[in-house]
Amino acid sequence: MDGMSFRPGDLVHVRTLGTGVIRELRNGGRCLVDIKGRALLVGVDQLTPVASAPRRRGAEPVRGDSPAAPDTGQPRAGRSLDLHGKTVAEAVEALDVFLNDMILDGQAEVRIVHGRSRGRIKAAIHKRLRETPPVRHFRLDPGNPGVTIVSF
Image 1: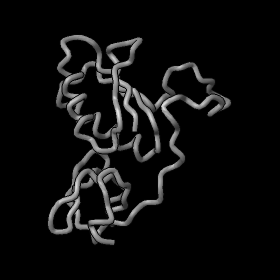
Image 2: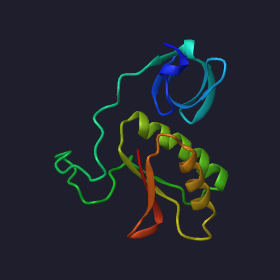
Image 3: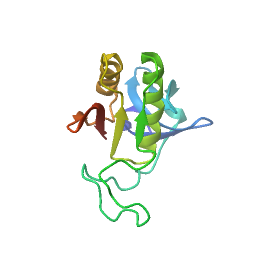
Image 4: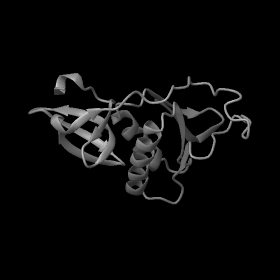
């Protein structure tokens, strides 16, 4: 498969390294691939496309998804990231790892808890979300301006 067959946001398996998401295509048959929050430059000859992720849900939660966990309107455990107490650099690094895991898990929507204080972490998180190709949309939670809702 040549580099023209891959696109940013595609899930791929990198030989000996694991599964990741293509962040961008580069010249010379290389791709920047995000694997567990780490960006790696990999030749397309090392990539294998991964079958599409599990069925993606729409923006609205699906009721009856899990009989053991009724839908309360709040995210289920594992679908949110709390960045309280982190520096800006730590928050951005944690966000990269979290987004990669959630994309590979096939999540359609996640929540990032950044708080409302001076807004430095929120600004850095929103900047990183704009730079991340698989992110289709993000918005502040209308009920809590300290939370950003991200849709893939």
